[in-house]
Length: 387
Image (cartoon, rainbow, N blue to C red; front, side, top):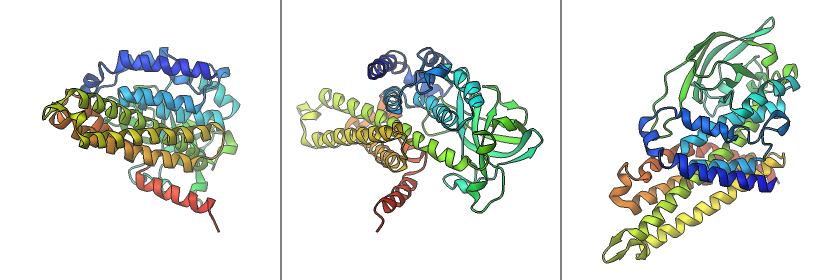
């Protein structure tokens, strides 16, 4: 299995060098969905990396998945975004779905026939998940869903939206939440009671759609409650376990972007001359490179540690939170230093630093801000070291 994993990572690295890096700047500038790249990712089997072999996937672990995300993000961070919400959906269905749900969805997800979106946030409920208002009311063999979901990555092209909704009023509120597996044709802006908004314009993270999803009396079969009848009211806990995987993904993306910024900088510092020698010969630049390289390496180790913990089946919100916090902040710091090393060229779109600099802030706010990570980490540390 390790040999297969290494071979796939090498294949993705070669794919990134050949298919992504040469065209990343053009894709980013156009801010359009790169359908051709997605098709090539399907051909490589990337949408089935962690799906069990019995459902047509590769059955690889999350450590391998994180390594692949790093390689893709190294080329163009947006490409890794096509996998994140998809694999959160794969994880949820495999871990908590009924036999019928696993058999019905996972084979199609493994091939990329359908891609998944992960729907948690709402206009007035981001990190405060307990404040969600989207409601699903049982009506015979269906749930009737009304509400608005926000910040859906892959929200337009996804054929499956894994959505947290309120199914009961409880105290505390999270005990009345369930997860619905909402199917829709990928690419359709209007379907049934679902309306997908136009793409939200963003600083970076171009080429991948981020949308609002409006639900107006949209009907979802009772059989599409994640986990079946026993899954009603369990949605909050399910989604939080998926968030662990999402934070590992963000950590891997941050490592990939930071590594690219560092390698571009150390190469540039040896080629660019000032005051009679390469700028790499100046101690001020060497200090920057030393700190950048050290932080990137440390961020990767934290990411790998969190992924291994997830692979073991253990709770890893502490490790995933630490990895996400450190890797995302490191990515932002490294990209800032990369721009300084490149000087005016770092501000020019013809160099990749400008794009990396715009993409880096997403990792600070995606899957919970750094401040939220600190709250999670602090609470978990107090649990572990309780006196």
